[in-house]
Length: 216
Ligand SMILES: [Fe+2]
Image (cartoon, rainbow, N blue to C red):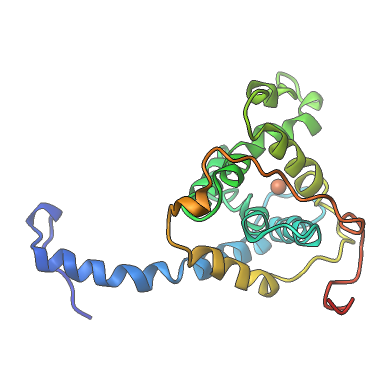
């Protein structure tokens, strides 16, 4: 494989940078696969003490979104919302947000970016010096309610070892579709538009048969 002529970027030629540009598209096309590898790693190594791994939590969250007939943006966001846990446990929400930002709506990115603060309503009152109402700082934001709903319906409740989630392989096409999108396309970003989560499905919170099993 051809390589560039430089050892310092400022010495690079037009041909060097055109060569690198050629390699970008095939490299970008494997982003979904690299994310899958990290999700799999979270099945082996995640924070102790929970009844299920971070991978299983993420699959459960994505499955709840899927059973609520959420769009690809929400399903992929639910699948990836904790993918930063391993490398940036203190700011994992922002890591996940930056991964999805070019490819999903602004609303979905904002929800993932802030979900850490919104989750505190469920546990921070048990810890000295923590503020369970951290989310109140965003109370007037256009996407506030979407973050409240995401945490309530798809995140805080997704630690059930008996929930029948879909597999990582099931969600692979969702990841491939979303990360194959043109980055930052205005029709994807939908800046300033609040759509909210879809209505909750009657079966979303239960251990249920899958859509395929129901013949859909
Ligand atoms: Fe989570």
